[in-house]
Image (cartoon, rainbow, N blue to C red; front, side):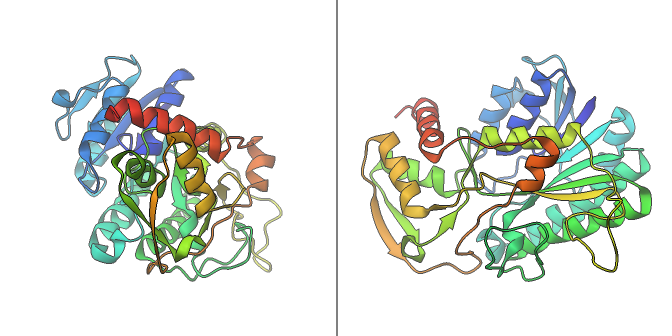
Length: 350
């Protein structure tokens, strides 16, 4: 297939594009390369996939020097005219939208960035798919949509109408918008609620990266909720395996769906929501111990109250993804952090 993957200078997008290329598909990558975090890391990922930093120019397709079937374009999803032109020229068979303004806490400081990228940008993706005959759309949602829900493990059948960050609200809105297009236009729309993804090339605003950086810099880390947070830490290889299976196996309408007793994870339209996580919740202090073991360093800690917008725990029920996609995450946090720390040592020369 010819597949558009957005967010390919980002963490999950970079790995997804490479995996699809290794399977023989043709990929066009897209990313705004914004400065939400260090752009050197984003350009590092692009370089790893054969896209030279000096060749990148806004709105121009760049051919990968490493993969003959990979091209990349720097582009904002909000740029509707340029996005429409790209769709019209390339005629995609499938679209995987992994681009978004990320981060829970940053959404408290810069809310408009989330509406621009995550709502307006996603609207542009939906419209471009609709008008160019793309029926196969998968997209990133987030475990943050569970908000105030305390029932564990989180199930896609649970109500998610109580988000506690604007980031989560925009991700919930993506699911609602996608369902509308599935119902109106027969687009096969599959949303993936990611659970705390980590690994080599990971995001520097996320705890696994911050902890690793602190271990080598001798810095003190902030441990929120006095270490009583629990997260379903999911290694990048396990995440990408699930993403690619969803792209290659687009969803169908649920023939048993009933409006009298509606299942929120599926529909009479070709629409499906999956959790994608390790399905094994880990307390923050245990995860920090895995970082310390991998780095061979004890990290200094400052224990603090929970931050606004944060949820106490995440824990994914991935039974439907396992059933439908034969998906089985298998990487322990100890093994995942060993690989992550090894990459960090090499990339940063520590």
